[in-house]
Length: 314
View 1 (cartoon, one colour):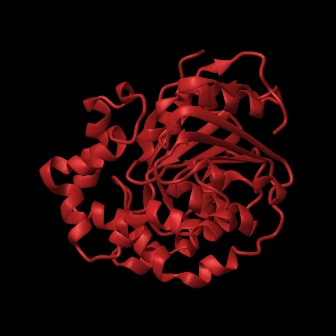
View 2 (view 1 turned 90 degrees about the vertical axis):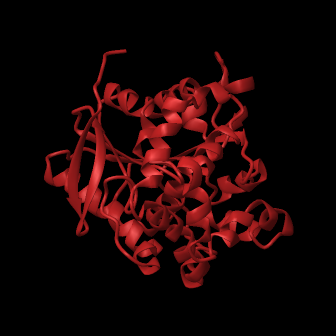
């Protein structure tokens, strides 16, 4: 694969300055949204692939993360502001002459934002790729069960003032590091050099509060959740990639997605954790590349090993 360097720049959008990792110079645009407690670094394996496929790819630090503007207060992290950021970043790319079709790629909290954005129809999208974050209708249904409530215990913990920030930042943000290495199946994918990227980001002044405010704002905004209980059928072609060893989100949350998305492809990665694009980048990239190019999307074996010749439509 041709080498495509990743560079970092600031993009003004929706009244904020976004710190963005960029790769490629194609007409097509790919916007990649990270999760918690990650940052733009989580897409380091996918950006060069997208550049090779003819995209200009941007992976921003979301509002409050890293060097991106950190608005104050819980209300600044409501979903309507987060989806407005996505629209504004797409508009910013258009203003810079990146005028081809847009693909939205997202993981974890980025996936929650992306689902809301895609279902809103705020901007035309050619494709949508989501990793380890279920369709909101299915997630809201699961949150009414005791099994999922137990798995999502941390959401309730995050509603407590100041204490979560204290715990996550003490001892050089050890809890942040353990969120990755502790959950990962292949812990070799998270050496100290990688974990240090997330420790440093979480320890920036005010960053941990901003990161946790995503959960606080969502918890307090029940109206937005209720609006997603009966969404329209999604027309945007969608690829879902799912690490099966997700401690917080079980595989069962994916069941029934095909009834809510018209053109839906799903691939599971056995023995791969929630941090799927970092833990099994070779398999994830093979799936993304095949799907974008219209080839059969390969299946994955144990630990994300690609099973050659195994494709299929769903």
